[in-house]
Image (cartoon, rainbow, N blue to C red; front, side):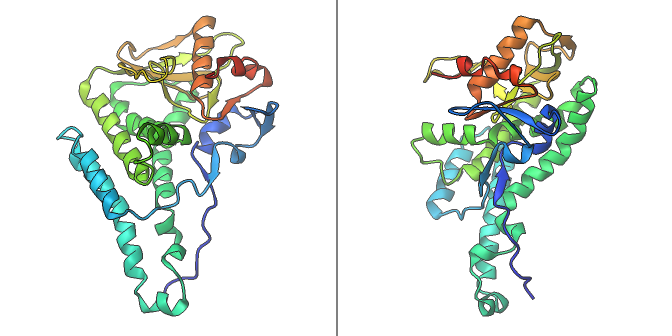
Length: 304
């Protein structure tokens, strides 16, 4: 028998709550949001949107476009990309199949009311990536360093955190005049995997652990990982280099770049302020800090 309808998770986070918990002070993260005073709230209210990851059925035209984009990937990475395509095709096929089962027909349920493991596939995928990332974050937040052996675990987690957000989704959809809107649920995973593998296979990238100086603290936002090489470019000019910056707590951050050297280093006040301004500029609509004073200059650092 098909079980009774499982309630869908309405509030779906495109920024991981556990990640944001590092900025909590007395149970609250300080948040800057345009048009509002800085306010403190729990992580459940940050980086969240109703049904953000709800599974959308792919049309025949969607599948053609996905395949065309996959064909542009490096030939060695196409099997991974096609694997992601199949992951998102299978639930749609299952939904259609279940819709013809006598138990479903007799219950009067529609494909939209299928069990949560089908309709909430993408959110469950993010939970798997988070389970990989959590031990790494816990270790790094206590002062551990990284080595090349950590790259296969670290990079897929980082690139998924980069592509999963509302900010990246809207920028990609806008840049493609809306044609990727219905397929981004697949392509964000394709591009995240490709980016991770290209970084690893290049052998050119290393990771530094940055330590905040003195009384200054790192801030973050609802685009928590950014390509710092592209944020300050004029509109319409794309980055030609890659430098992934990811604050992991008010006191620690990661920098993935060709100029990194597997070191831990305390940054200067100037670099800390530049890193914070970069996070403020990259954010979609919310910027987060541990203290109200950490967000004093956010409005000046935002895109005009």
